[in-house]
Image (cartoon, rainbow, N blue to C red; front, side, top):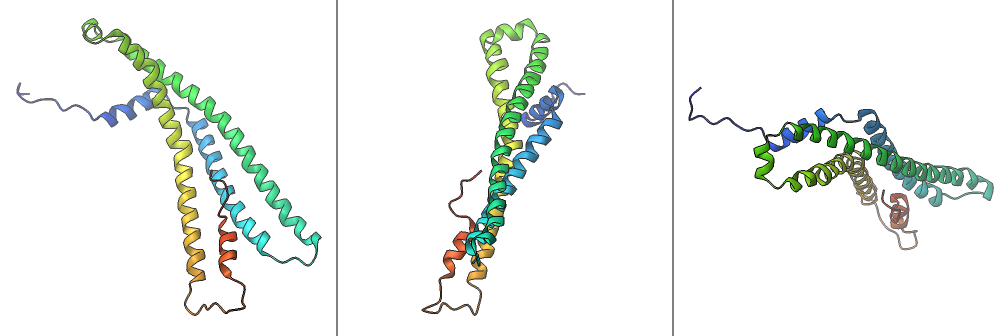
Length: 197
């Protein structure tokens, strides 16, 4: 190899993801946390649909409304339980991932040359071992367990808004002066006003 050819350094992202895989991601717990967050997003969408159909329907007597109201109650309880269990498991996942990344980083520090350590401030190495590993673990958890399900929720919510308003504005639809306004039904069915996940 000629002396004037420089060796190409690997990209920062390649090093970062390589470090994550070498540190050992707790895959099973990550998948469980992702599924809980994803399930909570889907339950929130289902709750919005059920609220629209439950309060938009006409019941002959009060006993006919008990079933749909119980379904709403149980969906709400399931959302709360998923949020509490998911938050607890994400705390455990964050601690495990942070520990694995710190362990991997400490092992790498032990192989540094003394000249490299003395070139920079040794306190910077300690900061990198503590703060940067914490930020890295939080980034991975937030991306995989929170942001992807949140993106699914937003896309599905916008898709439902679109289909509801397109059906409202379908050709041939007329608003008659004494007819009840369908906008209220569209807003109820869309779940506007529900707390986002």
